[in-house]
Amino acid sequence: MSMRVKQNSSSAGSPCDFTVHVERYSRYITNSGHIDVITVHCKLADGTSTKSFSFTLKELSSFDWREQCPAARFDVNRSTAFVQRYLADQVRQQLGEPEVIFLMEKRGFQTVQNERIFCAGKDIFRAPCSETALPKIESRMDGPNLDADSNVEEKDAAEYFYGLLSLSPNTFLGLSAYVICYLLYPLYEEIGRPPQFCLFLYGQTGTQKTTVASFFTQLYNRGNGFQRPPRLNASTSAAAKILCNARDEVVVLDDLFPHADSDLRKQQEKTFLEVLRYVGDGTVPARSRGSEVSQQEVRCGVLFTGEYRIGTGSDAARFLSIEMKQPDLQLLKQYQERPLMLSTFYQFFIQWILENYDDVVEFLRDHYNFYSAEVTSGVHTRLKEMHFFLRSAYLVFLAYCLAKSYLLADDIVEADRYFCNLLTQIIDQQDQLVRQDACGKLKSETNYTMHFRQLCQNRAFHIADCLEDFNESKHDGLLYKGKLCLRGKCLKRLYPNGSLQAAINQWRRDGILETGGQNPTKQIFSLGGKRFFFFLLEHLE
Image (tube, rainbow, N blue to C red; front, side, top):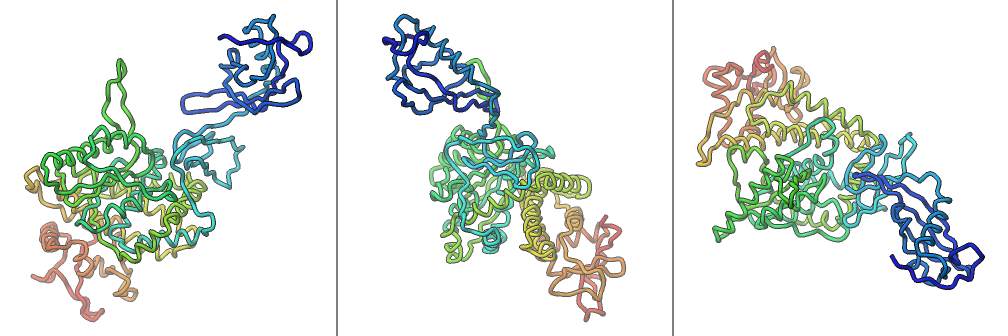
């Protein structure tokens, strides 16, 4: 490298008329290693100083000082290499131990020297109660950030979120649980069970599917408006790029509709099915780049929207279908007018997770062990795991509400019971698709007995312990003479569209239902002759 030199007017022995002053010596720890960075300024002969500038330790020996100090003078009798060595030695003499800084390059929950942190873009969230010697952490990420309204109280943000769910609980509960599930991806990863499934929000045109999908899933940059989600008519390679760029969040792919052009319709469905496999496998297939083969990780969820349902067999076991139930549009508009409230809630929720990180991980581990050991189900294994992921994610949210005293314990039990029943219905419907072949023919009969046992194991029913405690408005049934007695309206809700009769027939054959002759129900005269379904407890274990 050439360096133009000037006659030096400084003191004898110095090859230049300025001195270098080190301001900061930092070692940035990244995912791929570390880099040492030196920040300096130069003091010129006239007493003025240059602006601060930085370079790496590796660049020190060959640094172009002329570019940063154009007004400086250099001894014409000294070579460029000599001047560079001289200034490099001057810098090295001022270096001590570098300040270690952990540089965040990815969003989401991460661990830095045993401390749990959350990188929200340019902001870093840390547990305020941490007793560790806090390492220095910085983020230099450009792009999306978790915006929040600093004037909003935590309770108000939580009430906003809970109120939003109540606008259309059969739809919004599943969407919110899915977003929370992928927000907690690193915690599920710690128990060895990262989520790897998709959601499909389907419904008629005009039901606000795209609007709702974007509103619920876009955590970052909500202050700048909502991005229009990419469409399913994109190529599979374009969709793969979207997946690989997302981390611990849910992206939306819009809009599976019955296109008049059969080729476009086939392309949409092809992209839909390929993305299902990418998310389910956790990787995008290996691609050749010259002599190297690259395989990229997928650690995001995908929410599809569409007007018609597709997928049978193993494809249908990779996603859950949720029907879009249109909420009150005026109320929804009121919530949409405060877009930062949702991301503000998530900021408070994330802080609580950081403070209770290990406890939440243990809860997820225990809950998964319970599902593995105790919950029997006739549905596909992947669908059973989806039940675990969505229910456990929602339970973490409910635990947050309980810890903050935003909900009472009885409210928590009722909310969990409602969602568990809803989730069981959704999964049972999806299992019907799983058990169909490509021609739509059902592969086998639904195992209603195993399904009912699963409901009991999941504590899906609100049961009174005795006759005296039974309250029609609060309970689905009661324990009576060694039987589980359930009201018919409860079972009709769980087994709609004629499926209850098929379930009753199977329960009778399997001997778990005690009937009164031809009538599948029996009366309890102490309760005014009300009729109940009598299930034998010894056959439900």
